[in-house]
Image (cartoon, rainbow, N blue to C red; front, side, top):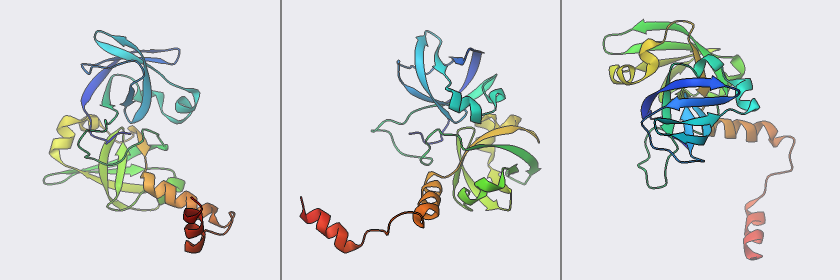
Amino acid sequence: MFTGLIREIATVKSYQNNILTIHSKHPTKLGDSIAINGVCLTVIKVHTDGFELELADETRSIIDESKISGKVHMEPAMMMNDRFEGHIVQGHVDCLGKVSSIRKRENATDFIIKVDKKYIAHIIPKGSITIDGISLTVNDVSDDTFRLTIIPHTLKNTLMRDYQVGTSLNIETDVFARYIDHILSHRSNSKKSMSWDDVDKMQMSY
């Protein structure tokens, strides 16, 4: 699990035969989970100046491989004793989005992001979303776009400062919205939900 708080701007050294080599100051161990631009990957080799990660076929079928080149957002998996900030991020990219508009404001910048309409149900006004691994708040939502208002601190400390109209984005929607939508959409095809009497009977059997 991740929080969407970027710990380092790392650099991709190479990407060959599904192996991604990262230059990073972060100390890692074999088997560690690391999010690169919002994609949860596993460390398979450690170097003195970074580490290697392997991308599965499923991952490569979803992401835009241009997102694993040059500078990238890096976040190690959250530890049990860490302070919880940001929001719950799984590192499972749902879809790709594109920057459709950038509007400067007095003390912030609005980014309008376009996504496939089928993912809009999981993007909640004033809810959380992960963009290239960054935990952000959705301001408002339309039929196939949503708006983010980014403060100067976030622009300065993330790669969003370099985003332009047309930039491709890894998007992970809100995990709770996905769970609720899945449960509700499959309820009509499932057995009747348990009553409280059913729950009591189960508890009494132990």
